[in-house]
Amino acid sequence: MSQIYLAPDDEITDVVEKLRLSEDRAVTLIVPKGASLLQSLINVRLLKRKADELNKVLGVVTTDQVSKHIADQCGVVVYHNLSEVSSVPESELDKKKTQMVKKDFDGSAAKVSSVKQHGEDVASEPKVSHYQEQKNDHKDSDEDLGGPNPSDLIENDGSVPAVEIAESSSGEPSSSEDIIIGKEETDVDDEEDRPRHVDIRRHLPKWFIASVIALLIVLLVAGGAGAVYFPRVNLVLHVPTQSIKKQITITIDPNATSVSGTTVPGVIRTLNVSDTGSANTTGTKQVGNKATGTITISDTWSSDPFTLNQGSVLTEVESGLTFVTQQTVVDNGAKGVSGGQPVPGTVDVSVVASQPGAQYNLSSGKNFVIQGLTGNEARTIVGSNANSMTGGTTQTVNVVEQADIDQAKSDLKSKLQTSAQSAVSQNEPSDQLLVSQATNVQITYGNSDHAVGDAANTISVSGSAVATALSAHISDLETVITSVFDKGLSSDKSVILPELSQINWAQTSGNGGDWVIQQSVTGQIVTKIDSSTIQTFSLGKKVSSLANNIDSTFNVKSVDIKRNISWWPFMPLLKSHIGVQIEQ
Image (cartoon, rainbow, N blue to C red; front, side):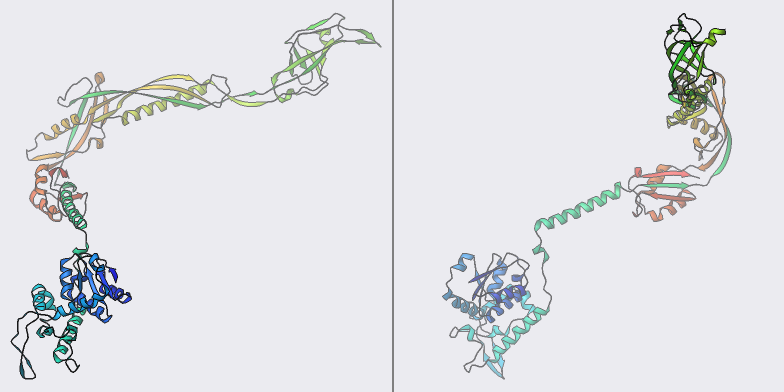
C-alpha cells in the first residue's frame, strides 16, 4: 500500500500520473486541509474513475471536512488518520472497494412513481438516498451536471454486487445503464471543458492578507497626510500699477537712537584685517669666492730684517688686482752679493684676493709690489707667485634697495584696503545697508623681511588695518521711504517700492560723522490686496481654475502659480503652505 502526499496546489494531471506510476494496488492520498483538488466534485470523480481503470483502490487521509464529504460521496475510501490506513489488511481492500461502490448505488426506501420505457409503465424502485443527500448538500454541483443523474432511478436490492448492476442477465448493457454511463460521461466532459474556479484566498496565508490590508491603510493615511502637508504653492499676483517718482534724502546719524523724520540711526562696525605686501628687488651686486695663493717676498734693500704685517696689500703689476696678506712675516734681509748680483732675503706669505671673481685666478710668475713702500725700498722689496692663484668665482645677484621696500608697502596698502572693504561687505548684516563711502581704513606697517643691501629676489612687508564701517537698518530706511510715498495716497492704495539694493544711493559726508544718502526713487501705486484673504480663497481649490478665479475676483492682471509638486491638482489645505507675492 503506497501513500502519495499532495501539495495544496497540485493539479489533477499530476495526481493521475502519480497513480499510474504507483506499483501498489492500494493508493492513499495524503491531502492537506484546503487543497483545491478535493474541493471539486468533478475532480474527485475523475480520480475515482482513473483509479478504477488502473484497478487500484483509492483512499484519502485529510482533516478537511468538505474534502471528506466529497470523497465519500464519490466512492473513495476515507481514512481518519495514517494509522488507520496501515491497519487495513490487503485482503480487505477489495471488500472496501465493493462497499464503497455499493454505497454509490444503495438508496433509501423511497419510491419514484414510474418511468416510461418502450411505451410501458415500469414501477420504479426506491430512489437512492446517496444522490438525494448529494442534491441537498451539493446543489451547485448538481446544477453543473444538469440535474439528477439517471442512475438515481436504479434500485439495487443487494442481491447482486453493485459493480454488476450495469449488466443484464444476458450480459449485455441495459438501456438504463447506457443512460447512466452516457449521462455521467457527458457531465464529466462538460466539466473538464469549463475553467476551474480556484479560490486564491485558500492559498494565501492569513498574515500575508493582513499585511496587504495594513499596507493599503497606511498608503491611504499617508496619501491623506501628504495631501495636507506636502503641497506648497507660491502665488505671484501681477497687479495693475501706476508709476510715481519722488526724491528721497535720508540722513544716517550714528548718534541717533530712533527714526525721526528723514533721519535714521547709524550703526558703526569695526573690523580688523591683516595682509602682506611684496615687491621684486631691483639692486644688483657681484658675489662669489675670492682667489687664494702664496706670494714670495724678495728683499735686496738691506741686510736688516724686513717685517710684512698681516693685512698688507700687494698689487699685481700688470692687472692692478690686489691681494691681502693673511699673516705677518719677517725676512732676514739681503744676503750680500754673489757674482756681482745681490742675494735677496726671502719669505713666503699667504694672500687672498681683495674681491671675489674669476679674474683673480692669476697664473704663476706674476710680479707684485707692496702698497705703502716708496722709492728704492718699493723697487727692492717685491713679490712674485711661483704657483697660480685659484678659487676665485664671480656671480651677479639681486639686492634690496630702499625703493623696493617702498614698493612693497604700497602693495600692502592696496591689499589691506581691498581686504577691509571686502570684510565689511561680507560681514554686513542682512538687515542693514552699508554706506560704503563712510568706510575708513587705518593701516599699520610692520617690518620687512630683508634690509637694504641684502641679497634677495623679493622683499615682503607685513601690516594690519582697522576698518570702521557705517550702516543703517533697512527697516528704518523703508519706514522713511514709505512715509514719503504715503503722503497724499488714498487708503485703498499701496506702493510697491524697489529693493533698496537696487537703488544707487549718492553718498555725501555730513557734519559730526553724519552721512547723507539721496536718490530719486520710483514706486508703483497698486490697489491693496490682503494676502490672508488670497490664502483663504485658494484653500483646496483646483489649480487649473485658480488663476482665472483670482483674476476675476480680485482684479489682478495675471497670476503665476509655482508649485513644489507639479502633478498635484489641488491647492494646499493649510494657509501656511500658500505664499502670496504681489508684483507689478
